[in-house]
Length: 428
Ligand SMILES: Cc1ncc(COP(=O)(O)O)c(C=O)c1O
Image (spheres, rainbow, N blue to C red):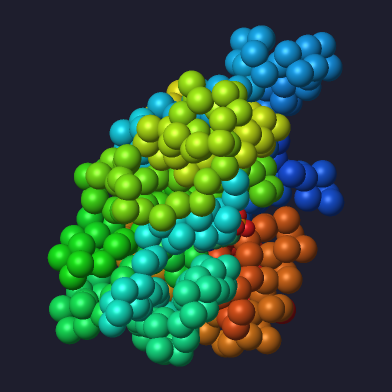
């Protein structure tokens, strides 16, 4: 990059930051520091979101209820623990584009995918396949393989992976539609990501749901990289189920509680198998201690255990902040910032990295995945250079650097800083 181009790009980034109506939200987060005492250029909100400053107060409230009320905290205080998860329902429904009864917060993501597959993967005769994309997050692959084996079936026969051999290539909905048109009567379940973790590609969930349901299959989504990143309308999309974690774009802390969606057409259904626990009981019955399980209405019937209060408090903070900032405003900034980064990368370091994420802003969220053209070894050196200068992305084998400018706390200047350090990295 010539010095002039670099200076001009910095000026432009600073102007964009100044004009950004959401710029003030950065102050609401703890930004980790680099060893030189400056804030890191933190571009891994797609992996672990940053801690909101107001979280300590919300956590302390729960700690003091526990300290002062003991077991009575279940029934007293401003947010009694008995019904704590209820307080997350409405904002979580708005996040997911769902009806309130269709969502519930519980467990962790892989646990929930298993619980949902207990209900929605019901192999019958020849209809015994699960269709996934070829590069799923490993936990999803382990989960579906073990579900297939649990039914006494063989993953070599029942697990179908769609997409190109190369990890650079994107899968499109058409490939899935073509497969379902040919083999749909063999498919019991389609399990698909909302946003693909390695490439950053986002999918048309309505189109996928339509194709799966037309083939007579169930359809569920892993929204780990979509929740809090791209707009969701799960109810209208017609998904049977979905689950997401809250520690990435939702900033709720490592391992924090997951969200679940079950479409209302399945509520109260008698023909879905489901694992049961006391918290999934109708709240009127929960403490009757009777032997018979009377399910709660809606997605709550999938609840097993009493609420993880200390991991739901961060979700409460997070959803509150998203609503204050506004989903539409966040998405607008996200598109602008990722677009700015993309343009700068293409203009300045196109010879160094290939952007494998789709160029169409409607086909991606915040994340861009950069394949290092010179291969793994050069890529590791480049990544090391970024890290030494406080630019935090993440490395995915064999040669991909993932970065996600997050609209809540990243600045346009962070995008510039990444490109500057990449550009310098060509000389190391
Ligand atoms: C796409 C995807 N699915 C599943 C998981 C597993 O999540 P958990 O460890 O919360 O079960 C992750 C974790 O990062 C993920 O990115």
